[in-house]
Amino acid sequence: MISFVIRYQAERPEHKTKEKRMQYIVLDLEWNQPWPGSYSAKKVLPSPIRGEIVQIGAVRMSCEGTVADEFQTLIRPAYYKKMNRKVASLTGIKDAILKEQGKPFPEAMQAFHDWCGEDSAFLTWGFDDIVILKENLTLYGMDTAWVDKWYNAQLIFNAQTDGSSAQKALGSAMQIMGIEPTRPAHDALGDAYHTALICSRLRLAEGIDAYEKAAKEHENGFHGAELPGCVARHVSHGYADKAQALAAMAQEESVCPVCGGAMTCGKWYPQPGKRFMAMAACEQDGKFLVRVRLAEDPDGTLRANRLVYSPDSEAAESYRRVSEKPPHRRRRRAGRSRAKKTGAEKQIPQ
Image (cartoon, rainbow, N blue to C red; front, side, top):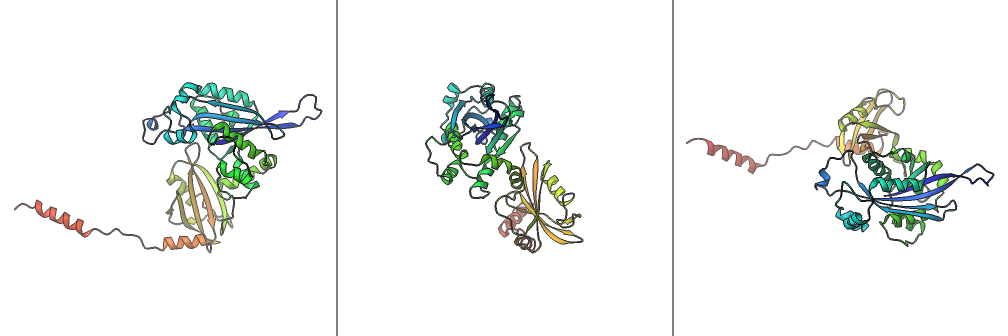
């Protein structure tokens, strides 16, 4: 639930250079979610949201990397009015506090927008914050264009620290940076402040320059360590359901990684985590294993991450073990059969 904003500020008139300087605004959002099965969870909203924002905390950093200003506000929820017990326990935000101190969402968001200024570029710690923010803005019929430009700062952090692809909690990132916590965790302003300390130690300008490549690799599932035996990867978007996505992967998207020609695709074998695998064949270049992972995009459609492996890879060997396994047939229970037979005999008239 942590985000950053970069604002580009022109040099003051007395400076001769016309270069733009950057101010950083570190943003943390906390949001409420309805308890599964509750009345709130069954509500049909004017526009769907995954969570309703209840707290904003932000820290503006100077060009030298020091804390220059802070912003904090509570938001009174209008749809998910009852705080989720887990969220309340984690954040310390209670129903009574929001009722007494919370502002209506449009008022709070306009104040935050004014504080950030125009021409802002957001960086999020993960991929959720901007999705939640845009969903809430859309729900209230407010403009979302000012948050269109954004980056996931965790990709930059990973690239400049251990190079891994694993998601890291704020506390873990602080430990890696050797930063001691001085403010409460899971408080929007406290988390924003600690995140500002992390950002001050990153080479953000350099990281943003390399971001597009890192984001594309992350999207395609090829961030961090290389996948042994993988020879091609691609991501496709806009599928209505699983059937449509897998059909596309077996037809128009089934392309040979060597010659670019069409491949015939065999039976899909389901795997845990919305993953599927099948063996595909090219007339010219032979067989390849195709693995597909399905995930939901912010607009509700599915994206398909397609990975192609060489036939002698460990992944292909895993496929062969699964495909050669004899089909499991359910055996009828003898006792159940006898019970049915006995029941039938009782119905025969004497």
